[in-house]
Length: 411
Image 1 (spheres, rainbow, N blue to C red):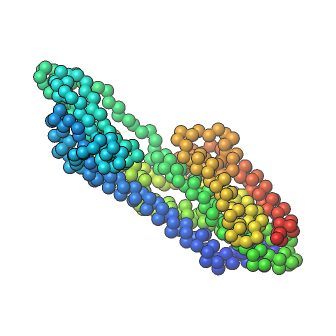
Image 2 (image 1 turned 180 degrees about the horizontal axis):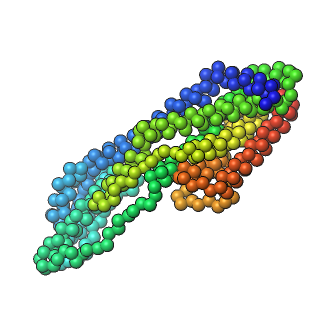
Image 3 (image 1 turned 90 degrees about the vertical axis):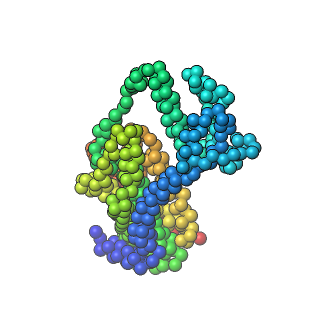
């Protein structure tokens, strides 16, 4: 590395560390924000699930006298309150005065005694979570009521209930503990890496370009006997170093918070352990990451950071002030993040080979594969080679922009 480049790099890095705003964005925010997001999000979800399960729902029933046995089952439930309504039951559910309305048809018990099918009208509001919760509880009670009816009919006709024996499904998950943990990590880590690769060095890129123009210090730097290329590379290395530090701090703090908090792993286990009749045991989840996966994630992240740093630096130099540079970078950030979010959230999405040549998207797809223990050499080579090419192009464009006096000193 040329001595002048190293000198500019040290100078810009020292200024970055001294700047509290940049230091907050580089270290403090990712270090604090990621654990808070990780632990807080899942604790909030658990709290909401518990709160929803404990909430008492309001139900109104029309023609209660037609189904005394079923009504008694509903009335015995602690989390269900049966209330009377004066007006139209549909209006009460629509307005939120009721969570669920039940309309019992006439001759309900008579039809049951005649072994005929009977329909119960349920009035719900799908946009009301309490309404959906009430429907789930009533559906469970109706299922138990149907079982009682069948048992009584078999007993009256002296039929063995085993005639209703059916085939049950006993699922066996062949995914390993690491694959399950890698799949869950792949839902979040790739998105966070791309996000911090952009935002981590954003303030530094703006400060060393538009910030210097605003402070009128860029002119004095350009008057020194230093080649324009060296100045660009010094600033570029500073932005890249800051961005890579942010990525490592953010992902490291997220991973530590995930391991110690249990995160979505415990929630997934709770959901699986509550399966039908306890047949399915909860799957173990291993969030450990293989050393080769960590190394590959780091290498890809480096080239991702190099590419984004050069792009942001090129955009920021067009601005005349810090605020103007932020307005330029905002839309470009969305252009990158939206495709990544879309690809990362599409269920069952199977990318073709050439998807691994799309910048940012290729890193996301490769991260998801690697975290699940899949090492496709073709995907790895295409992702790395394409990111290297994009990085070189972005750096070349940045040097060209810095060589144009009209861009550097435009009014």
